[in-house]
Length: 218
Image (cartoon, rainbow, N blue to C red; front, side, top):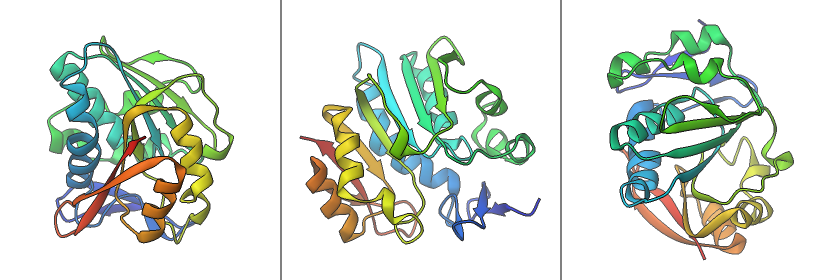
């Protein structure tokens, strides 16, 4: 398959010709997702949660972040309501080609890709998914979220998704002390997050990546 990439940890990613970008770090798709989105973003909140945790993802992509989130929810028996926006969904054949099940020891990634769009769909007793086939700029919600996975393409490829106005929009539906995690630690991203209503922490990145960001809603 033309778009399939094998990253350094053996896990698959995809390449976007439209943006000349891969979907994940070439150092390791699985390592990146677990380090940034699960361990830095979700786990500290989920482990201490007494009520459902609301997670929002910018960029559903291959479904890897949602897949790992679902499995952690089931493992800890904690309820998660997960909303993801994706303007350019991958095909079913592409989803079936990914090797996340083999490497993670979990099954049924394809269930995330096969579920319908724009409805709440119970994937398991502890994980409900609502995928929106829409651009972030057009997304609206009445929910407030505890964790934001910000996984847009690099600011060079999608500069419009890393601006103050976008982060202010996200801050408006993020609970106070809710967290946003992202792989990009560029200065323009830090400045836009602060202007949008977050305080910003810099954390060690996965593998050889120096830093990633964790932002807390003020």
